[in-house]
Length: 129
Picture: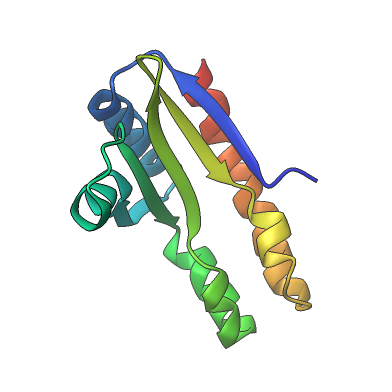
């Protein structure tokens, strides 16, 4: 079973990030967190790497359904995706929410996972078009 879906954009990191954010917003998903791995590695280990960020994307209505069905399932939110530079392009990799939210036994949580995956598949398709 795959745990992610990805697309490579022929754009520099900052332009790719803006395109991803715009596409997510068009599907009612917003970026709610940003972990700058590049900065952390540099500050904590003195290691230089190309831009690499871990983001959290969220649709509040879907998140509410998960938390309302099973409060502790909030530990499985938000949908995570990474952006990183590779060979002058930017790779965008989204977590597949089905295996992650599938850790819950609640049918509503699993239903939300399927809905979120369908949305993310559309986002990936649009980014790759």
